[in-house]
Length: 117
Image 1 (cartoon, rainbow, N blue to C red):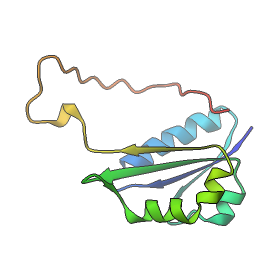
Image 2 (image 1 turned 90 degrees about the vertical axis):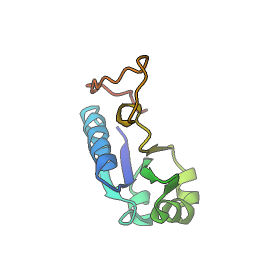
Image 3 (image 1 turned 120 degrees about the vertical axis):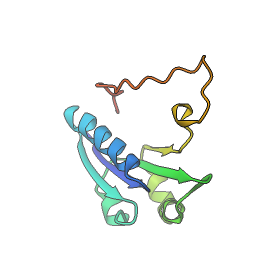
């Protein structure tokens, strides 16, 4: 199976929690996964992987500078292999002060993940 690097940037820990869940799913599917903050992921770590996932929290409409620095510094290395980027932000309708009656907020954690080929 593949060797996957998950490089993340988190503010309150939610992003790393999701990355750990993703790591578990991928490892259960037979992949080798390395989970690192973007500040600790460099060319050596990228050279050891077949695929890359970059995950970042967003605050006030912006990612932390370290995310843009990582992507900019390693653009060619990221482009050379399959990659994915996801971001998490505070836009949760369940946390707004007024929720319309048509908004349903149910938390059903998934126990399966899509296959990464």
